[in-house]
Length: 126
Image 1 (cartoon, rainbow, N blue to C red):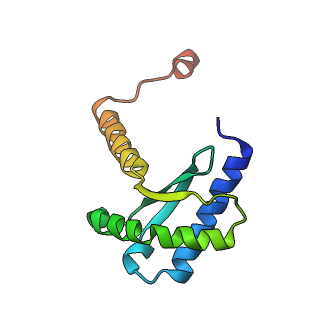
Image 2: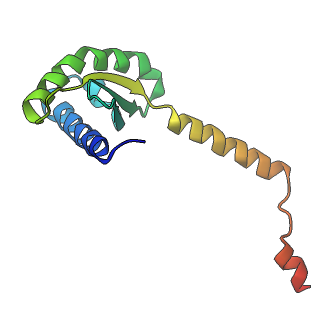
């Protein structure tokens, strides 16, 4: 279970990293990443920053660009946040949106194949 302190730090890291990318990073590939969340280890030595893209075809290029600016972002975080240790940042592509779309399409297919059944309430009224 994640402690309340770690949750607060995750939210603050997400906000700060977004602001750093917007203000200090010039690379447009990095700016095309939409940050979705941060998961920090309990000892704050490691942070995974999850992102998604509007165009999934650029995944390799954006991942490479994010990996290159990660030390720079960590340096800015060290100056802005008051933490004893600033976590090492690793960017990870968030596949939850893609999986949700796949699940939605599967559910639509199932609904097309099977007709909706009458509920017990409707049959009791007759």
